[in-house]
Image (cartoon, rainbow, N blue to C red):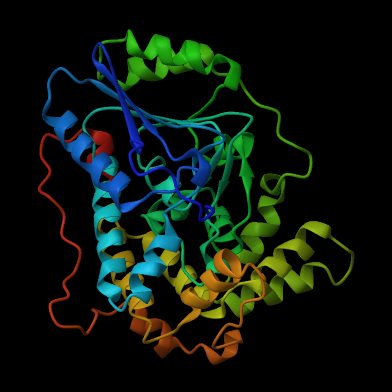
Length: 383
């Protein structure tokens, strides 16, 4: 998650460049690792809607300034809003963010996201749904929400559930970090381009003057290469991941991992177990249920369900783990959250069910999307 220091208020948080028929949008909060503020989300949404209707725009390029593409949503600001006494302010942030995710997922024009740095949480939401995702040797992807008392949101139950085998469950529950080579291998990235060639790629894309995905892909291919996958990559452990993370419950996943190391020590499995045992038990259970449901749902259905879930988290009636996670990781930084319930076995199926129900609060309603038309077959497939 992003640090808490703030930028000057008069700095534009999204920089806009017009290059022929291309539009280059640069997330511009480098000190906060380009964490998404409500202002940034609103501006991106307005720009994407305007570009969709503008026949002069054929391609949108999204990138980040500094060493991050985007480290996630500005969670600390959401927590401050809720701390002021109105959880619906926090819910409004996610409403707008999820609408942006949906617009990107169903966008009729190619979006090329340049992921040259950190891509976490909400940063994945504004990139992975787009048509092209370009990783580099600097890319670091993670969905670290279970360690924060949250769950992989921004449509993650859609895209994680579509990774090979049960790799998505592994990534979503453990919050493990993937590099650019791993992102390409599992499909989170569509291309891998060395960072030294990005400026040439950007220049070439701006000259394309086409919305044809095949033409855009061919241009990116010219600058792409096959990256080296590190020997200790989790992607080489897909057999173990599929054996263990295909289990029905979180308890069974942990038990199967423990059985794997009965006969011989394995640092990767030990680290995986440590991540799972340090995460919020409630978060683990609702995350697994969410990803499993996502396998059978379109992107819109996933976002509607995730909005229900995040509203329950913001409301804080079912659990306060999100606020405790933010305290321990982002505010006090003692990295020692006190989860409640503290053990997986105390989190009942009925408690998990509650997160997937409508929120009982006056005036609350399910997430509603703008009407979509003239969609590309790629976008229709997501629905």
